Structures are given as C-alpha cells and as structure tokens.
Length: 451
Image (tube, rainbow, N blue to C red; front, top):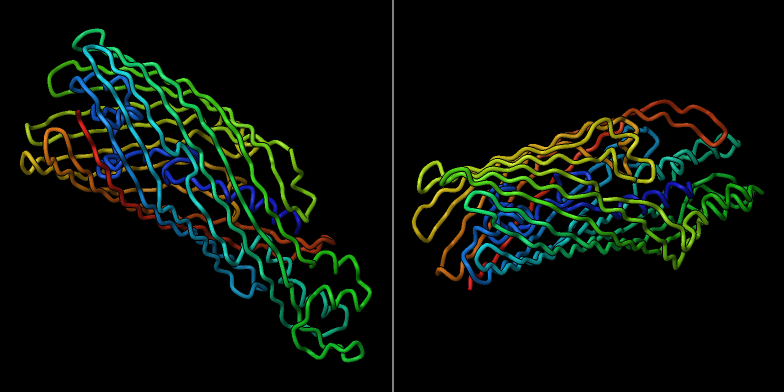
C-alpha cells in the first residue's frame, strides 16, 4: 500500500501535453494545432520543426509568440467488486503552455532561438486517488468480518496532485548552400522539474463489536485495529503523505536538412538526439520511507526522426505531410522501456487554403501509433494511440504582423487490462478488468512579427 502511493505520485506527475507521443511534446505552435503537420515548415515555427528551412525566410527578424490552453480528462474504470466506486477521473489543466520563436535571417545565414515546454507541461489532479491503492482498503470489511466482527463499509481520503514542466532552450545555426539545399545544426538544453503531493488519510470502517464500543458507525481504522490488538494493520491504515520534487537537466544535439527540388515543393529531415535526464529527489515529507531524499532515477526524452513535405498544389492551396519516428526502446525510463514492444510513430497531413490575401483557413489530421506490452499499462501510467483533428485560421493584418488561432481535439483509443488481486497473505481475490480512456481538447493563439 505504501509503495502504490509513491509510484502513483512519481509516475503521474509526469504529464505530457503532446498527447501524441510517450514523452515528447510535438504541439509547439498554434500553427501546429491548425495543421498538425509542420515538419517542412518555412515559417517562424521552423525554429522547432525544421531549422534548416529558416533560410527561406525573408531577411530580417521574425518573432513568434504562442500560447496554448490544454484540457484533458483521464478516466480509469475498475471492475473490482469491493470498490465503493470503480470510476476515477484525473484532470489535467494547462492554462499556459507558451512557446517563443526568434529568428534572424541575412543572406544564406539564419540564427534562431526557441523556448517552450519540450515535455511535461501539465498538472494532474486525482482527487479520489486510483484503484491500485484503494482496492486494498476495499478488502477491509471482509478482513474484519473474517475476524468475527461484522463490517460492511469502508472509506478513505486518497488524493494526489502532480505537476511537470520540461523547459527547452533551443539554439540553431542554419545555412543555405544553394537555392535547393540548406542545413542546420543546433542543440536543446532541458531543465526539468516535477513536483508532487499526495496523501492517504482517514481510512474508516464500520465494525459492529459492542464489547469494545464499536456499534456499526464509521470509525478510524487505526483506532479499531489498535483497540483489538492488531498493530500491523493499524500501521497499514495510518495516515501517510508525500511532498517532494524532482529536478534534472540534459542536452541534445539537433541536425536538419531542407531540400527544395522545384518551386512550390519543400522536403525536410531532422534528427534530435536522445536527452539523458537523471532526476534527483528533493523530499520535504515522505511518510512511506520509499522516496528517499537525494535518490536518483532516469527519465530520458527519446531521440526521434522527423520527415516532412509541403506542396503548393494551387496558388491558394497548400498540402503538407509529416512523419515522426520515436526511438522509445533506446531511452532509459527506469526499466519501463522494457514493456515497449516497438517504437512509436505518428503520421499527419494538413491543408491550408487562402480565402484572400488576408485570410487563410486550415485543417489537419494526425494518427499516433503505439505498440505497448500489457505490463506497460496501469492506472498509474498508461498510453493509447490516438486520432487527432485540428483546424484554425490565420489573419494577415500586414506584411509585418499576422495572427494564428487554432484548436485540436484528440480521440484516443481505449484499452483494458486484466488484473489479478492478491492479498498480503497470498489469497487470490480473482481477476477483473480495468479500462483506460482519455479526452483532450486544446486551443491556441499566436502573434507573429516579421521585421
């Protein structure tokens, strides 16, 4: 029981806001939300998606200010029959998810800087905890009744909240070798912080044992077990809490190429190396003894390869396609990577249509594919493939200023897992299904300046 609380806090505080990968945030601009395919970008968000494409910008300064608001609900439904309520909702609210892009282009050379949440970027709030650490309290009425003391109810105050932010600082140098080929080298520095709090409090039962003063009303489990001479059980149901933080930093090189074989067609390739992150615990409160201050644990951002293409089908119509392949199996996630059967990928297409010189509308579709072993999934941390739809528009107020407004909705695949429940004495309580689902909606605004 102690271990479950800690593992929940450690895992669920890491809340990716990308909703399309296991770790990496790909949603780095409002333009991404309205097209979902930006790998061949030659706009200011190419600072992140296609640094080599920045040489296609006009000479001068280019600035992109972006913010997203992300709303997500994670739902776990557990069929273990002794639970009071087998449905658990976790809310992820990200009101501010900012990105900054800054590029300076002069002749064949472009210098650029990007800032944004490369991973994490959210707060998960599970006000009822999760079944993996409530189910044991649900067995208390049966346990106590087995002692000859009729008991029919239990309750517990179980909750935790985790926040995660991986701030990325990216620098690129881009150079056009000729009219067709350009390249870029760069690097991203990651400063990661996870903060988390959690508690198990006020475990209550309703024993009916008048000789000891218990008359079927709810009493604290610690009081009951202490009174009847069961100190081990009293310790098990005692109040416990966690208040801790993890920090890590890492560095990843980035290389990219951009190829323009003909007017109206642009092709790109980018490779981001793995970011090694070793998190160190800074613990204020840890009643479990399983979260030692100063302990370390790996949580890398995997390397990935991006390919993209943009094609001006008509003077007013642009089509774009993107492919991302993530080397998840090579990352170190403290052993969890062993449950990744094969690396994940996503594939996206987007279309943009110019209604006039001032208004552009766009829409996009993204498919995300995972191949995860059953051991990877749990109520504590689970991932599912998804189909995402996005759309929005751009308003060109002047040659020096435009605005992007966009939104996306993520439709996740559902998943389930059979779990066998064993008591601390080894008694088999049976196998029951646990179901995982999510809902996500995000909207974004960008202000783009070309000076």
